Image (cartoon, rainbow, N blue to C red; front, top):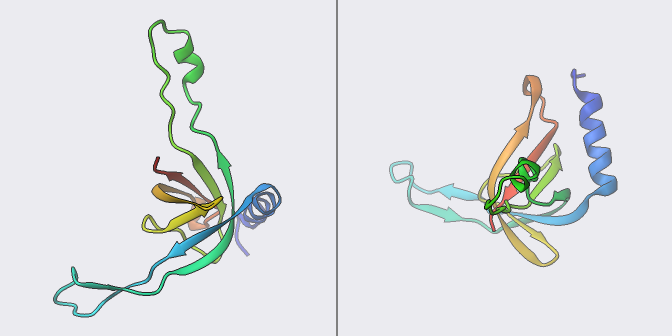
Length: 125
């Protein structure tokens, strides 16, 4: 039993309740010759249904920027929260939301004491 089991359970429960069902496509990669690691073989993509909560682009500092004359507000990328589960996201995965494929730009892991609670995933535009 871990220190953060309650927080992990809360993240799973809230994302399951308020999240949206999406698919994550993970393509396994195998290296045929260890002397030529750049020559890889792509396997059949494994598609899994997961739940994610999506957020609009970051609003950090937008309130401050509204008061500066002549400043243009730039919008960021859509972010999603995914609870720690059997699927571990990778930057090479594709998330399909409402029949729109989204490439992963970055993944931030909330893992105090190496116990993964959730993933914050930022998508490319």
